[in-house]
Image 1 (cartoon, rainbow, N blue to C red):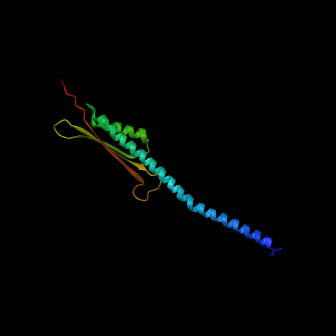
Image 2 (cartoon, rainbow, N blue to C red):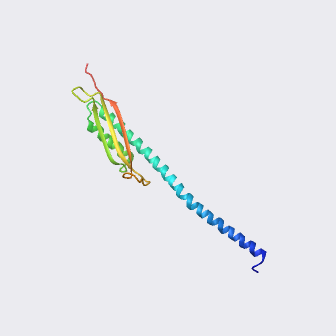
Image 3 (cartoon, rainbow, N blue to C red):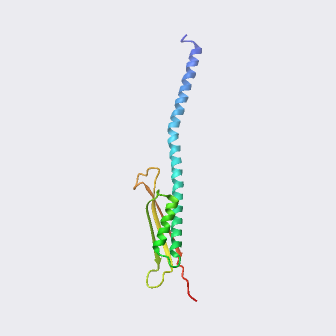
Length: 149
């Protein structure tokens, strides 16, 4: 019978079940994209920190090689390029390494300064710029000089 209290209670319970299920679907639809965004943001942050450390290591290693007695700027720049490729592979874009002996002039240089720059493609779309994150590091080392007896 349609007017039976038992049928009305069962229909009310069924309505509550479907309303609760619909509420869960809406909550998941709202929360899941937020959790996905946070997870991708954390992944991008971890990749950026790794890439920044690789670029810093490349600058330090390139400066160390260029500071060796008799070494050239090109040798340091080559070493920096090798370090970046070993740490990031082909993932880094726009790589540039520049070694400069300081001070420049008639006297032998006292220091070598290595600057390494690159760009890291973002996994999360960035609305501004070219969609990359800049990486930069500078290292400076004393130039080796050996004196005769």
